[in-house]
Length: 178
Image (cartoon, rainbow, N blue to C red; front, side, top):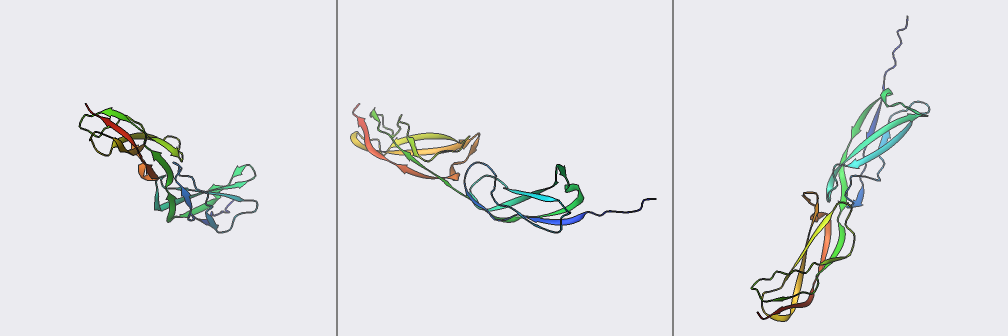
């Protein structure tokens, strides 16, 4: 007659703070902590992720653990208590956008067909810039300041706020008489 019972051991896995620059994903380099006794040969594999990939300073860090013993997964031998922290930080990535020269005939608007360029920094994979520019005013002259603008999308989501954007102007826009 077998009446022995082996109870699960309780371990607590606690996420840790992490800081990174926006990269479009939830990965974290932080290694959660573990409290409690592990069985002989049991090795914890600790990871964590941010709750989402957007820029802000109060991310909840979500920990996970696998317990390996050689080739076998021993997690079912444990009762795991997960504790989170809400101190994860994702900082903005930086890009610089510069307007380009444009020449047009007076039409009463500040619209420009010129497309500004990103001259420094890199958008992360999946983020797509919508670059536009306008003249500083609609008057006929040859030293207009061209004002760039960018909206950054990932699919249908506006992710512009995940970037710190420096806009550089050029003063070489021309509007000729009609």
